Image (cartoon, rainbow, N blue to C red; front, side, top):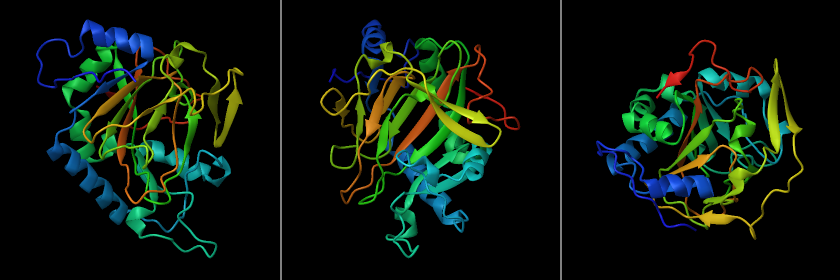
Amino acid sequence: MSSPASFSPQSKHSLLSAEQLEEFSKNGYLLLEDNVSDVFRHALIDRAYRLIEQADLSATNRFSTTDRAQINNDFFLESAETVRCFFEEKAFDDGGELTQPRAQSINKTGHALHDLDDVFREFAKRPEFGELARELGLSVPHLYQTMVIFKQPRIGGEVTWHQDATFFYTEPSSVITYWFALEDATLENGCLWLEPGGHKGPLRERYFRDDLDLSMVALNDTPWPDESSGTPIPVKAGSLLVFHGHLPHYSALNRSDRSRLALTFHVVDGQHPYAAQNWLQCPTLGAFAL
């Protein structure tokens, strides 16, 4: 693993050094420590749990990357312009009852937090996030998706190897992911695994939307990494991992007694057409400029 990169939100100069830009070009990611203050971090965590308390969870919609048939397409697609909670795949027993308290049963909350929630919108509007995207090559950075991923204790689901450009397609490819660690991410509770340099490879899949139908289409048969070729990236709470949309990444099951909350942004370059076949469309809200 490369040495962590530093990041100073208060800097009036370039946020990234020439060495950091070279590191991003070489490896496809940067680790920017101490990015989120404890005050902001706790506010985001508290708000995420409050949204669970307020949500109507009568519809037991689950999220799974290992069994997409569990996903209710209507509920999922509507989340592009609202805020929805999705249960962990293993949240229910065979009788349909929750195996853990409600607050420890949600896989993720999204996907328009930056547009519709005051706390998350205030965070997303921090000017350095737009500047960071511009320094990494996006001329007109637009934030399309925000979500809180809980990776719940004991039942936190696996997120299989994938590339984010699969879901946020532009031509040329432009999506960059911001992954904020709201809690410590460790090997035990399901930290991210990355393939350093893997962003230089092809896009392997594309997720297509046709009205209310969703399908994953193979584009290239390049094998996915595994735990022998990938690199685990344990990070401290408050850190930001920013990575290229073609970088393969994965996270394992969480069978520990500790959650692993993370907040993610998916940012694309507004100067390139955003594909009408992407699952997430925002005809009402429009693009959120950083």
